[in-house]
Image 1 (tube, rainbow, N blue to C red):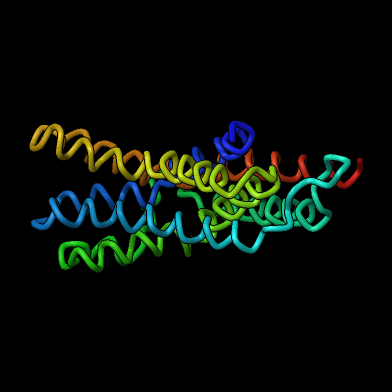
Image 2: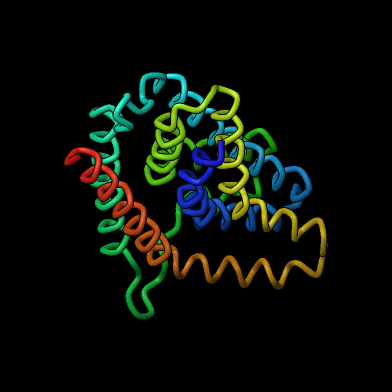
Length: 225
């Protein structure tokens, strides 16, 4: 299981650093339904990561290494495709970054969080984790990396659980701060939101570039050996 966990650490960190879910959690915690909507968003985020990861593990049953210790060619091809897609996301994020004093463009839903119910907050968490292109690519990459180690099903499930926990750290941090510090958390969370808003594109660009290089490097190494 240690091998499987080692494969997914970087992907988990990449998911944890997703700015929009963190900003969303902070916004939820500033609404009248903060005590329910914040945890609901986090629960939806965890559920989305778990569902996508479980589906990929189920369909990747034949991804284990061959007798020569090399992964199947289709697994290496998948790594290459995911790496290229992440590179595209990195370029797109960098080109769309705010310049100078330009106002940061934020999703429409961020302006309507005051009207969210816990169910809607949970659905948003699922959408942000399972449908956002960057997060979806990272979850697929992580689950495929677990599957290719060919460890028993129980160990694969445990490795996926570790990935989900790591991936939830970023979104979960504001929720923990809110319940731990109560009113004192407002200043910290507001500063975190502003910083994440301003640096969203830079964070995503760096994360996607690093993980794209990892995936493409793995694919080239496997396909050429």
